[in-house]
Length: 205
Image (tube, rainbow, N blue to C red; front, side):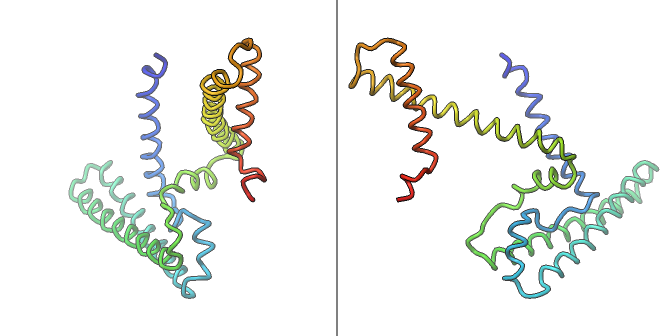
């Protein structure tokens, strides 16, 4: 019932957050490539000055786009349809140039390292967090990420431990033990599955 009540507004908030970040980066200059690790690692592989030239062109295109967006908003508030239409058309054209430079940058980086095919859009939100969110809030977000990961992992390990105890141990090894015994066995199997999935020394041999 809790999920039924809060799922829709929560999903709306998540989608709205993406829209707001998109609008934010229309006025605040974003990096030409959000995956900073790939950008830094591939700099030495690309022809000297190629990425710098693309970054300079991107800065100019984004500045032009921002100016046209501001002119569009100003004309809209002033109630000038002609100026609003012209500014909107110019803003869309500038956005097209920005997208074109991004696509060219991605193709250059992919050509430099064909094995690295990471989706750059996966790094938009984390770039926003690292560059524009206060450090204390970043700590809370990291904590939330760890809690979500541990919650999923705990459910998985608990299911493995319970299944091993009930379907294997109880039927094939110890049929008439007490409930307390099976609880201890379940904990032991949970610890075993956690160890087996952690990549500890036995898996490196």
